[in-house]
Every structure is written in structure tokens, then in C-alpha cells.
Amino acid sequence: MSGHTRSDVGIPVQMGRRLVSLAVRAPSVHNTQPWAWRIHPDGIDLYADESRRLDAADPTGRNLVISCGAALHHLRVVARASGLMPEVSRLPDPEDPTLLAQVRFSPAPLPRTAAADLRAVQERSTDRRRFTSWPVPNERLRLLAQEVEEDGGAAVPVTDVTDRFRVDLMVRQAHRLQQRDERIVAEVQRWTDRNAYDGLPSDHLPARPVVPDKLPSRFDEGLLPDNGQEVESGDGLILLCGEDDSRASWLRGGESLSALWLSAAKGGLSVVPLSQVIEVSETREALQHQVLGDVAVPLLLIRVGWQPISRSQLEPTPRRPLDDVLLT
Image (cartoon, rainbow, N blue to C red; front, side, top):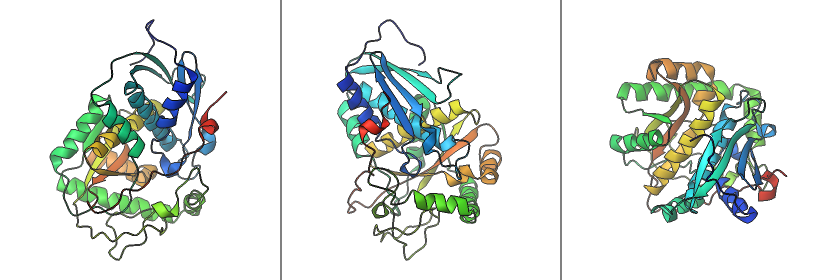
């Protein structure tokens, strides 16, 4: 929804801080947390922090805006779970492309899913350890795609065997090409074990498994034990898509990522975004032509699977102090 109505109400500063503190639990590329927020009497504004853009892997800022879109959706979810209906104006200022959204609020009844929604936001994490051999039914993938569509986005489950084979090859090709780019490799290393507040800790990255994963990781060997024995094609793939490759589509794509992820988490599924295949122009174009038939533009590839029941859940990755992401 865009625009604001006369039923909008202001929010106390402490309520605004609470909402933002939960919104920043959203996933972001390399845990860069590339967002900035302004809390004021009328509501909350979301800005892109361009200083946190990955210059080598993300020169256009696609992943940065997608990350911010995920935070925007998180904000919408926690607002509704707090008795507030968010009304969002996306990209409201053509003169300021860093202003991604203005959010205003009006009173609303608590949804029956409020407690589960808040729990999903607080507990969501990225677990890159290999999934179990339990297959993700195509119907589950379709339901996740439906969740995205109901939120205003677009998603395509990759259920055709030939398409799945093609996508796997494209992921490997993108990985090989980026591994040859010294700037991208160095950028990943800079954001690994960066500090206590952002980046990716080694203890959240899997150690090199005995049996290689069929879809490679861009990250070096980590410290997280990974003894899973993956079986081919037990996981599922979903493509998040847009009408075009614009900033508006990227923002919506990030909201779709959050909608899918929170729904998957509530259903016991684990999610791993695969952005390399989108970052490399050759594989991104191949996805669009060969898998999507040129009817949509791919924004992000999502891998979905089951973690072993006996495996302990990972703690969420660290977050920057709240005051570091608030604008005055």
C-alpha cells in the first residue's frame, strides 16, 4: 500500500526503537546490514546505507536494496504483531534514491499469528550446513511461492527436472567465475570475521565436508561442524522475480525474501539465499532466458531444505548497536 491516510498515528520513540530493533534482525548479504532508519513523530523512514555496498560483487546495489527490502518486511511484520497497521510509501522521493520507504502506522487488532510472527523474526537465522535427504515436496514450494505472491511479490518454484539441472550448472558456473575475480574473493574475506557486530563469523560457516556439496559456497572453510550426508536434489529451489531489474523491483524482492523466509521458518524449513548466480551477468541472463522464459527477471535464488531434528539451532548472527543504524 502506498500513501498515507488521516487515520495515521504517531508512535512513541521507544516503540519506534523497539520496532527497528526487530526489523534489523532481517537477513542481509554478507551480514552487511546496509540500512539506516529515522524515527520521527509521523513514523519510520528506511534509507539505504550506500557505504555498506559490496563494490566488487554488487556494483549496482541490487543485493543492498534487496537486504533493505527484507528489513522493511520485517518492520511490517513486527508492527502488525504490535497492534499497528503499517502503510508504506516505497521510493517516495525521486531526488533521493537512498530513501527507500516511508512507513506510517494506524491502530489495528493483533493478528492471531502475532506471537508466532515475532518468534520467527527473533529466531530466524541462516544455517549453511547441508540439509538432510528428506525431500521438500513441490507443494510446499508452491505454498511458499504463494506466500510471496500474497505479499505483492513474485516467486517461481524450480520443480522441473531439466530446469533444476540447468540451475545447478548455472550456480556452479557463477561460483567458478567469481572465484577467479580477486576483488570479489578479497571482499568476501573482508566481511568474514569482520568484528563483533556485522559480517559473517567463522563459527557460522560450515567446515569443509567429507562429501562435497553439489552447490558450492562462496565462503572459505569455517569452524561449524557439518557432518550431514546430503542426497542429490533433496532440497528445493525457488526463484524470486520482478517485472524488471529496477530499484523498485529489488526492494519488493527483499520483502518477498523476508515473507518466504519467515513462512518457511514457521514451517520448520531452513533457507539459504544463493545470490552468486544473480550477481554474474552471464548466469543471470541464462536464468531469465532458459528457466523463466523471459517473462520475469530473476532477483534471487532461494534454497530450501530440512535440517536434522537432532541438530541444534544456530544463534542469529550479530547485529550492529541500534544507535549505529539510527539517523538523527
